[in-house]
Length: 236
Image 1 (spheres, rainbow, N blue to C red):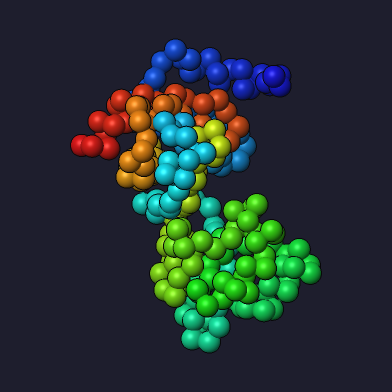
Image 2 (image 1 turned 60 degrees about the vertical axis):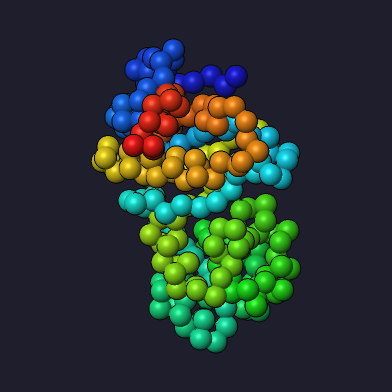
């Protein structure tokens, strides 16, 4: 186990490891733990009661945070003709077709955070699967990034749309904002993510769905959240 620095050890003393905090209380505490010299990202982590080895228990989707992520997002759109113009007018940072595919293939260019493609472009974009796939950058209809409504897709991403996907250990990690956000903004973003996860609950999932939930800043310890209180919050 890596040795933690003095600052981290001091912050850990502020957290009761035996306690499961309410969501609002956890948000209040996690802001106090973000003491780095930069605006730390606050992340929500959840372990779900699913078995990702089974296709009918895969949890995947996207959700737009009401207060965004606090991070500028560079959006690339694979499109031609009128859709190219539509994407640029919506605020896309890069738009193109064969030229962008070639740039990514030959130059290893990856100066973007999200990619969108019109359905007719996927035959071309598919060539980039081995490059974009492992980095989570491949357009996917399940997350709304393969669509003819490119304007809407770009605007949603710019507004704070985030993707989530359960990993092989049934964990999900989603950024919910920055330490500079107000407690209310972080609470509403966290609640929105948890509501989206609850809606995505597979019918095949058995037993407790939220096995564990935690909030943490980039450079600080995690704060455990009470799953039962979370269910009360998102059902109210």
